[in-house]
Structures are given as C-alpha cells and as structure tokens.
Amino acid sequence: MLLQSRSIQNRAAVHSQGSTLRGQVVRADTDHGRLSLNRGLKVNCSQDTPREALAKAARNAACGLACAAAFLGPVNETLAAVQQAYPDVAMLTAGDPVKNANALLRYALPIDNKEIRTIQRNLEGISEDLRVPGVKFSGVSKAVNTSLKIASKQQNKILASVPDQNKDDAKLLLKDLVAGLEDFQVIVSNKDVQEVPIQQQAMLDLVGQIEEDMLSGYPFEVPAQYASMPLLKGRATVEVNLRLVENPTIDKAQMTIVLDGLNAPVTAGNFVDLVQRKFYNNMEVQRADGFVVQTGDPEGPAVGFVDPKTNKVRTIPLEVYVPGDDAPVYEETLEEMGRYNAIPALPFNAYGTMAMARSEFENNSGSSQVFWLLKESELTPSSANLLDGRYAVFGYVTEGVDILEVLKVGDMIESIKVTKGIENLVNPSYEE
View 1 (spheres, rainbow, N blue to C red):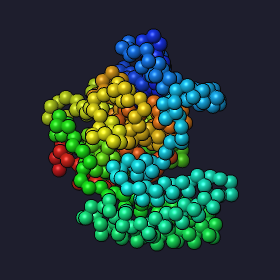
View 2 (cartoon, helix red, strand yellow; view 1 turned 90 degrees about the horizontal axis):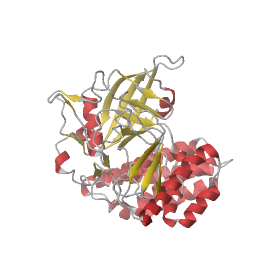
View 3 (cartoon, rainbow, N blue to C red; view 1 turned 90 degrees about the vertical axis):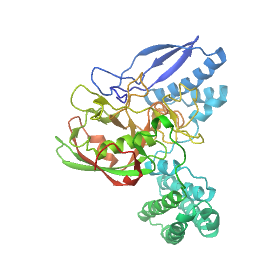
View 4 (cartoon, one colour; view 1 turned 60 degrees about the vertical axis):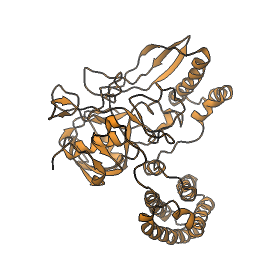
C-alpha cells in the first residue's frame, strides 16, 4: 500500500474534453499487498465545465512538466509560459520547498507569532549562505544580528503568544536563545565555518521549543465518528532499531522519527498504538526500490492489523490537514475536493517523509502499512507534490535518515519504541 496497498505511482493528469487521462497513477497492486510503481493510463469521467477543465489541465500540466524536467532536462521557458498563461499556476511552481524535516515540523506547529517565526526563518536561511563557495558570512552575520535584536528587544511580543502555564519555561528558553545568539556573533566574527552550522542547529532547537511552548490546548476537535479511535493529541518521538541482513559494512542502525499528532491525530495515533502493541517488532522491510521503503504488511492473508477484539482488519480514514482549516479533511483527497492549490501542513517535501499506505480506490483503507519517501521535491513544483493530499503524512525522520537509502527487502525492524510523548496517546487499544 503506499497504497495500503500495494502500490504507488506518481500521478500526472491532463483533462481533455471532459475526461481525465492519468499517467503514472498511484495505485494498489492487490496481488502483492504492498506498493509498486506502476505506469499506465486511466480514464476518469469528469463533470467539469470547460473553464474548470481548462484550469485543471493547466495545473496538472504544470505538475507534469515539472516531473518531465527531471528526466528531459531544462524546461524553464515552458514553465514560464505556463505561468504567464495561467497566473494561478505560479503558486505551484514558485519558490523552493522547505525540505528539512525539523523545519517542516516547526512550520507545522499551529502558532501565530510574527517575531519567533522571523527568527526561525532568519536562522534557517543561514543554510543557503553556507552553500555559497567560501561561505557568505555577510548573510550569516545579518541573520544572527537581526535574530538577536528581535529576541532581546521584542521578548514581550514573543511571550504574548505563550499561555501562562508555559511562560516561565519560555522565559528561560528566551534567555538561552539570547545568550546563544551572542555566542553566535563571536563564531561569525571568527569566520568559523565548522561551528556555524552547529550553533545554527542549537539555536533552531531553542526556537522550536519556544514555539512548542506557544501551544495552548489541542487545536481542533476530532470528528465524533473518529473520536474513539487511538488518537495522538500532540507529538511523539519513536526510535526505530534496524538490523541489516546482508549489508557487508552495516549490521545495526537506528532512526529517530517525530510523529505529528497535532496535524494527523488519527493516523499518528493508530501508528503509536501499533508500536505499543509491538506490531512492527521483528517485521521485515517489504519494499525498498529507491522510491519508497515500506513495511507493515503482516504475515497471512490480511493486509493490515487484525484487531483481536473484532477479528477484522482495523482501518482508519484518509486524513489531511491544510493550515487555516478548522480541522483535517477526512475520507477525501484534496484533489477530489477540488483544492488543487491547497498545501498540507505536512507535505511530502523531506527525504524520509513518513506516510500511511492505502488502497488506490479506497481512501479509508489505511491500517498498518507505512512508507518512507526516498525522493525529495525536485520532481515536482514546490507546492504541487503529486502525493500531497492523496496520502496521510504523519511524521518525519529527524535522525538517521541516511540509512533508508541502503535498506533492502528482508532487512529487519527489530523494534520501535516511543521515547517521548506517549502521554499524548488517548484511547489506546492495547493493554498495559
């Protein structure tokens, strides 16, 4: 399943006279129980008006061109022409996507504080300066100085977004941030290339903690029909211990994954519940093809977790949250809802993005099969990843992500354990 399934494909759609031709469709290969990248054409009837069909065609053509760019070479002139003809498509192709897992998790926090977000963007932007040959220290210096000015002079505005119960902690973190930024100034003045990224990450960690202190209660109500399911009402961190069976140089490896129940409570809660059941312990990697790494298909005929209380496969609905919405979208893809420009809070931007697999034609068939994406967003426009809104992302690998590249079918997940945030799991189905 990327599909729960048993298959995943990229999807590039082109509308023509009321019909939709879909190439490289993400779909389930039900003969094998897990994802496979299939390529083919599928025709879906469309009831769109000519104007709507044309708009969709433009959007999907932009997606297709972006995918083709990876294989056919530069298509800058073509993309520019598409953007000029259809201005709304510019949203899909403008700007570089955020690809860092920790940055994506910070931006996914449901907070609204201009000052702390400005500090965050300034510090994250240092990474671009470090890529300039010889290092662009003027840019690094400006980012650090501006961040220090905000952190020291606008503390009241930052703390205004922190609920009373978290203010003392946030004040201490702000104090550490100011001191750390002052140390950062010294590092920059010494042009210490080695220390800059280390201090940058340390400061961003503090910023992330301050942003988490701004959370006040759970951001939305889970719909009643799903409220009794295992839910992760917050975030949790899991440690994945791996054993590589036939790798000549690596025997053991470990990954750290942050699961985001703030934006995907049902999906993340389902996974944590299964982790607590030790469902994934001693389970093999079942797909590793350079596109995704997938696991979670249990032995036997069932393609998901069989609840011992019902003797049926436990399934969960498709769940995608778009910032600004009152709650996640359930049971429908964003495309099915006509929200072609909507960008999920948890996009498929980072190498190691973790999502729930499902059957192609059954949005609500996710159960236990999960996958990690091994491709970044170069294949697609920054705001139009072809998987966004079609599969439920619920976490990112934050440490040890490189091991995904060398995992093979048959390698073993020895164990997964929750190291932080288990208190955020409600309605667990397992017994202590």
